[in-house]
Image (cartoon, rainbow, N blue to C red; front, side, top):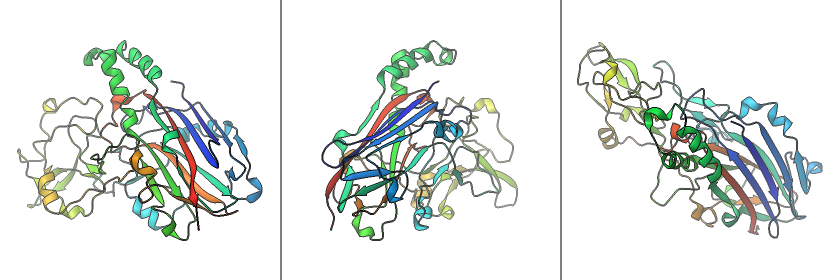
Length: 377
């Protein structure tokens, strides 16, 4: 599938910078072979006279209009193979004053001899941009001029392709049902903004902000749970020893929790280490959140674990209605003639329950619009 991305930063009103992004994603839920490939990336930048931009913090490099050759992205095309990642464990790198967000990958099968925390070095887009103003300003996002929409035409064409393919012979889905599934990719989209080099953090609401454009008031995404990452129809297990010292197996709880000693398990229905017959498991249908519990395994007891004070880390993304809120939203302090470094990341949150294989080949368009909020003292 040919993928095109276009990034444009341009002036809108007063001192406003616009970042427009067109993205087409072809992906699978934590599947190594079906990830996004990008054939072209174009980036051009335009600003008003009071606001300049650069990809460097050298004052001599700031311009009103910036054009980047897409060849630099094509030469590193492997870097832009997308798959779901997550911002879990972000306090670790935030507390270390890292200047780029760190994303983690939970696509692997858990290992008993590892910490099961794999840093993702690819699978997302990330770019540093520097802003330069002639006066002291707060810069934020203009929600009305931002866009997070499905590409209806592209998704309709993709739905027709899937409908006529061999992969639909078993599922027997209609074109409309396939398109509805593809359109759910939008729910997994995240944009994050990291603000660097700010000595007075009281000038911001948060140094690192995550935007979930489809989030509603009661929506919450938690970074943890049992998964079927090996696609065998069962939730993944790791070998352990029971209280008598005999070999056994227990479901592995992926993700970020406050204290793993609080995890509680239910005893196996069938004692013993041997697996039950695999034909008893549900067939994997491209959703690692769904699986059967092995009757011969210690199974994760969510209710008992939560009662025992286990807590899953919550994503804490901003809704669109919160972005421009002065007390909750994004405030980027920019001081006169001092380059302000921000890092924009575009990724798919792997712990979003809509991040499944049913979204493979979906397309959407994203546009972010930055604007001056008010003066900064």
